[in-house]
Image (tube, rainbow, N blue to C red; front, side, top):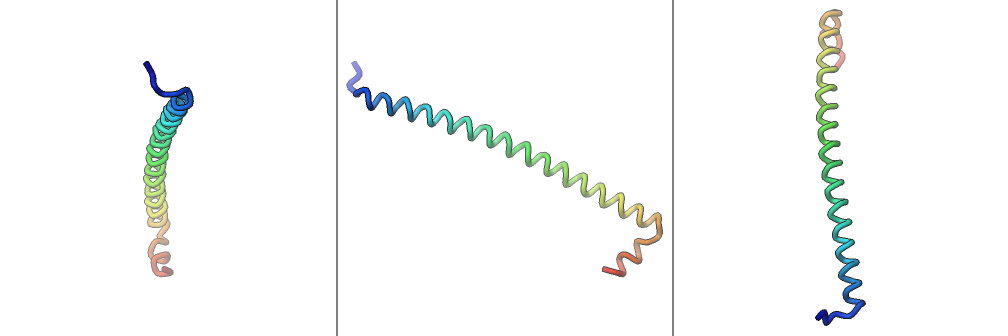
Length: 71
């Protein structure tokens, strides 16, 4: 027999629901964080590739040395 009153049972149910919601939010946040981290890393690689391509084009155009001298 349950010696707890209806108020205690209701609070337990509310606490369980809150804990479930918090767990779901935490899982979604972790998934979003992983996705964002992956996309930022991909963007970093693309930027590095772009920098390399720009440098290669500058070398082909013969202006690499003049740009380095300006810096």
